[in-house]
Amino acid sequence: MAETVAGPEIERLIQLLARLPGLGPRSARRAALHLIRKKEALLAPLAEAMSVAHERVTTCGVCGNVDTRDPCTICADPRRDPSTLVVVETVADLWALERAGVVRAKYHVLGGVLSPLDGVGPEDLNLSSLAARVGEGGVKEVILAVNATVDGQTTAHYVIDLLAAQNVKVTRLAHGVPVGGELDYLDEGTLAAAINQRTAF
Ligand code: ZN
Image (cartoon, rainbow, N blue to C red):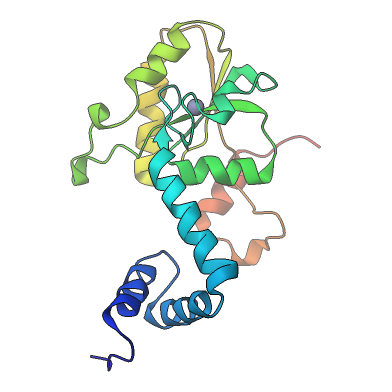
């Protein structure tokens, strides 16, 4: 157990920071010290921003995204193509796709994946709301942007069955060689998928 070097208020700040993803106890200490040193320029605005976020953050009733408004900024954006729905597992995946800036569509956040081993069933995910959204009409394509894991693929198959009776095209992400990737370093599964899903030049 490390020696306590500061008062309980600062220790609490460090302990809370250490719970953030990507921050261990050492970097949490460094971050806390940085915040304290930049009290006016950083600590105060951060505390204010966190307080406002805590007050206003909500889950979008349409797509499951998190935002300070409901419907969220993406759902309310008229410049987005409402005929394409990108289905993702988590808000983090939605944000990752938005960072890439390749789709100007709408999203549907499942809130996880089907996992019989962990006791996650269809009723635990935003699946019925997905079927309802597609059932309203207007959606022409559903892109399954789920992870290439066993649970992700199980979920993808469930969604395909769920939407089978609806007049909608269901597509999924390609699997294959990452951009800048070298064949020699790929696992056999990725290589096999890349060969099987090859495309014409
Ligand atoms: Zn939304």
